[in-house]
Length: 523
Image (cartoon, rainbow, N blue to C red):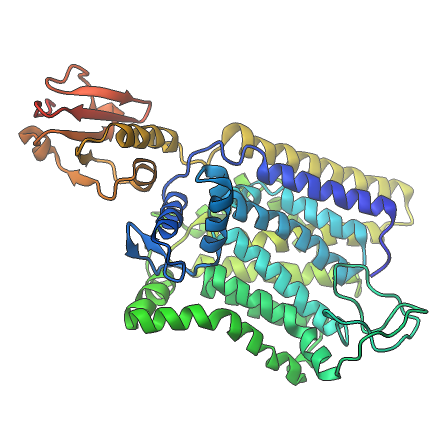
């Protein structure tokens, strides 16, 4: 990789600064909402309260649905910053910042082209749905960051003979040390002393250590979906025709690092819960979601495409058009073209994997967006190289990408800070107000819900553990006071309800309260 100039460092600093702004600005403004965010926040809160961080807790019971790493990090954030929305979301948001930098790093490593690399980072940052997912307490962006850094570690492994981790080079050869991060090449800078002597075996294992480390981190963040990285490295190996790693026993020895990371927690949970752990952790939350529509309702593959078009403008169309163009034009073996092909096939693989799954949620597609960013940026590099003899053509390429970046930035800003839709579940603010009112005024009230089943936000803010769903006949018969009743606002046609007060009435929801001497609900 070539030396980074002062101007390039300034642009890279701008990328990181914009990334911090889009990921952290007003991070704690919106409520934690159903389904995942509020549930995960409950797990963090109850785990801190229980004090046993090996086994996550929800409502005081063991919760073995997900691996613990993001919950541990979030608990640490809450311990430092207090229990609030910002602290709950901060670790995920920082993973988003890391993913943006990781895409830059990976692209620079593969192309040695600073412009294409920094462009890939900006494209990912201005892909509205990606920073939106990072600004939530979710597992998808942390997984994406781990995959990108894992792929970067793999690429660096095949591109460099030895890496020097916590050691100095053994000899001087006059070759420059790569300035990218803390991992140098297999030779010292000209004129520098050799320093420590480390056996080649250590270097051989260190060569592949980052790949196995980040693969293990991915599993501890998102469980088995992290193994999507394995087909991705096969795709990159095929496109770049690089298979020597298969014969490198140091690569396979690196599985020790992977196992050291994932085994302690998984073994402990297996011993503690036995078959029940795997039935929940693997069968219910992986296999059953592939085989049956557990969540997501009527979302289809067509819905996926529509959401990608609406939530990821203009990059989704640019990726489709560019992907077709790169097959239409014969462009040789430019490094940008090979990266474009590898990124295209990786993104398609991830999309097809989750399109086949019966359970479909738009956030499942988050890991494909880094590859989309690398695809579009590398296509820009190919386009620029193909017409670089034409000054007018070069200006045209710059103008097109400047316009795309501006459109992406405006779209992302609008989605994150103005509309808050579709990422902000529209009922969350009212559920938060209801939950806080219940927490403040609860005097042993029973808690009922009529025709409303989204409870996790109310659970989190109220501190309650159970809401009983009731039918219309139960409403006519009435309940023993005191109680709270939650229902959709349109059902309350008559606000004069004998024996009841209406402490909250919003656009979507209404909360009714019966004090100790009241009973009944008139419908």
